[in-house]
Length: 396
Image 1 (cartoon, rainbow, N blue to C red):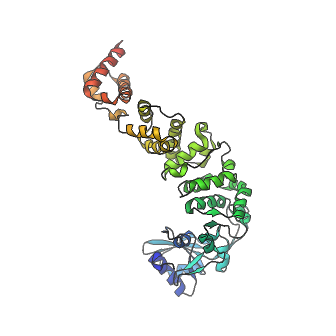
Image 2 (cartoon, rainbow, N blue to C red; image 1 turned 90 degrees about the horizontal axis):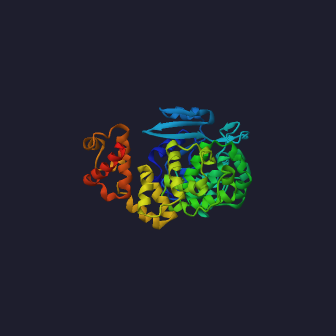
Image 3 (spheres, rainbow, N blue to C red; image 1 turned 90 degrees about the vertical axis):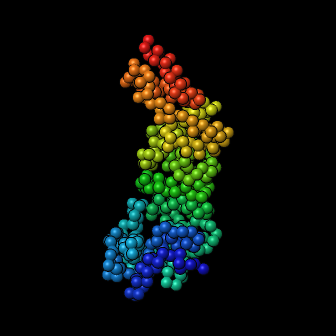
């Protein structure tokens, strides 16, 4: 039995107002699925038999978000609830969006246009009754991802649904039903019509799911990964799920997929990665190709990276070589950069006035190299002695 209190009161109130005016109002989509799975839904979408103009008359603050597609946003008690009129969709000529939309269709037809049966369940908040014409509840119980109707047709309508099937497999730990899985493979070229930014979003959600290795295996075996990333190398994804969620998983995925072959021209960067993530991947991957052999080499590697890269580097290292990871982690608090030195440029200039400009910069770099080799010399006396030798070399 589903708990009505699990639905935000604002959502229940919006549905109640719509029903009081003689219309139907149900919750649809991922929120219903997650509620059934005892999860905590984030976004709540409402579908209704009422037309957008009728919804606009029922509430004082309504934004015509996508009114041409039957969607308005109801602002109620500080919360924004999207309400979409039951709609049917025409053909998808461009493989991304319907050529036409028909408003005012029965609820069953509205649910029939959705991607998977687990997302095609409607919940009426007023009595907590479910409308489940495609047996989504049974598939949830069986932990199965199944397309609504003909899987090939669903994927031809929107190629991104191919990766959504893979993403839900990771997020929920579900298996993809045979015919749906066959369609993932046979229709994978529909992904050519999908913007790389949208693929990146789905890939990131896949990596951050509870079973990324299982889902990535599906993507590999179905040919989806080879189609999207023709320059990838063969690999196992068993390590990905062991890495903490976040950037680290993307770094590990990139390492396994491309390794030393990663270049600026790599298909990975067609994903239009955020600049910060792209830079991080570019900095860390070379460091994972040849792992340090001892504590000193570890400190040298760490000093050549940004501090913000260390966490992902350690996460990946823990899976690739636990022994080296243990050594590396023990070195992370040693002095690694100029900012870690016990002296700064002003102090050095006082000691050795001849070290100015470029020479002063070189002196600081020299000291960092020395301190990284031997952290014990990061004290004023030892540094002053090292600088004496350096200044004599410069003066020659």
